[in-house]
Structure formats: structure tokens, C-alpha cells
Length: 305
Image (cartoon, helix red, strand yellow):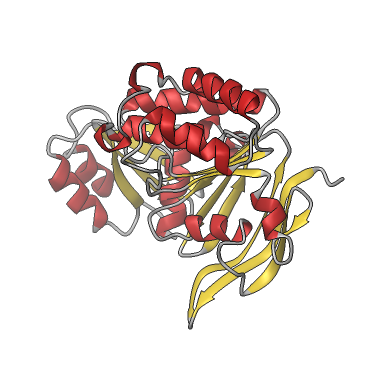
């Protein structure tokens, strides 16, 4: 058996002349958390739908659980859990009725179905809303219900498509606590997200934009990929004016706000003079200081490049 739960090579999906996914290659080891990071329209959902056989691939190859995504999609879908971006459960059923219905769809025997349902109600913290209609649930609890349904048949790998996109920070932490717990129990999880802070908890990251992979590796490996220069940050007197000024300066790159500060890169090959630095200092409330790179810096630089 391959060491990879997912093994993809040059995966491409075209709609006419438009390449939604363009030559993507990656591997996901068994039992790991794989973060698929990118902005809206980057190709994240399209990639997952090809892995599940929902969309036919244009070219390339891929295997999930050792099964070919071109020819064995039905067998793949029976062994994976999938939570889509859009809530797709029955709004006129209660939480328990949805869980019972989808346990039946998965063909679980009644005794096993009851045990799995009770376990997932507790795991996903749904105890207080079991008799509520899905229609009346807040967005975050809907997401937790959809998550629970994706786990009913005890899948080997779980695909989570932007599961925290509509939840508050407290519920986001709840989701990630569950994801980490599942990984520790041996499950493989592929999760798409637009939030850079979330992928810090992943074992591996792929960053995708406009259908193409721009970077991949562990969070530590990506941070160690040195940016071509020195990063600086400062607290601006007026953020909008500072950003507008910095964006026009050819000797620095990728100015962007981060908390109450502005960060920017001074590339190695670009000379800067004292007058230029003084102009930046005039924008700051305090000192303009060098700082260490973060994942956010790396991805901002990638997108700018």
C-alpha cells in the first residue's frame, strides 16, 4: 500500500479555455492534516470535487486511498467523508432526524447508527439542539451538524471545504479541536481555508491561487523559505495615508496592514537612501524596526509576485 492517502499528479480541470485547476501535484500522508489554502476562486473546491469524482478531470492523474479517481470514484465516495461549502442537509428535519436519515443512506445497521449518532452529537457539541429544525439553527451550529453527518460512516479520509468560513472565532477553535482529535485517532483530513492562521495547525500546506500551486510544505518549512530581503514593521500615524505612500515606493515591496502595524519588505537587490528611510519614519508613531517573517508575509509576497 502507498504511504499516501491522496496522491495527485498534474491534475487539471478546464472549462473551455479556462483552467480552473492547472497542473496541480501533491501528496497527503495517512493520518495527517492537509491545509489547502487560497483565496476565493483559487481552485480549492474544484480540486476536491475532482478527487471525489463529482467533476471529471481534464488531464493528469490521482488516487485516493489507492483508488483511481478516474475509474473508481464510486468506491472512493463510499469511504470518504465530505462537507461541502454550501449547507446541503434537510432544513425541515431536526438535528437528530438529519443524523438518522443520513445514517440510513449510508446503510448503517440501527444499533451502529445509534452509537455513531450519539458519539457525534457529543463530539460536535450538538447536545443542546438535537430537537431543533436545521432551518432555525445558527450558521455555526449548521456547520457542526454538516460536519457530524460527514463522519457518520466512520470514513478513512475527510474532505472539509471551508468549514469555518461562516463561524465565529470560538466555533472556529471548536472545529479545529475536533479536526486535531480526529487526526490523532488516525484519520486523514484535507481542509480548505482562506485563513492563514488556521493552517498553522496543519501538518502540510499547499497554497493555491488562480488554479496553480505556488508553495507547499510544512508550516515550519514554508517559514524557513527566506524572503528575498528584510522585513520591517511600524505603527502608522494614519494607516491609509501610510499604505498609499508605501505602495508608490519602488525600493520596498508588499506593504500591508497587520494588526495595528504595517509590514513591508526591503528586497536585497534594491538600494535605499537615508532620505527614503526618513520619509517612512515620518509616517510612524514610533520606530521602524526589522521583524521576523510569518506565514502571512510569505503568502503576501507570493501573491504579489
